[in-house]
Image (tube, rainbow, N blue to C red):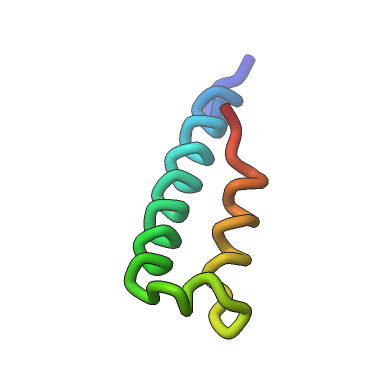
Amino acid sequence: MNEGKAKTVHISMAKRNNVDMALHIAREARQIHGGMGLTGEYPIMRHMMNLESVITQ
């Protein structure tokens, strides 16, 4: 029935992995930028918030 198509569970696992990796990178960028990573001058916090809003448990 589902041959040749990705199963929902596999899609969810891939999404979770990609969001986790992107969130890790955004957190590292925030650490590198220090206090400037929290300001509106750099979009780091905006990206982190967007990623945290799409993460699924």
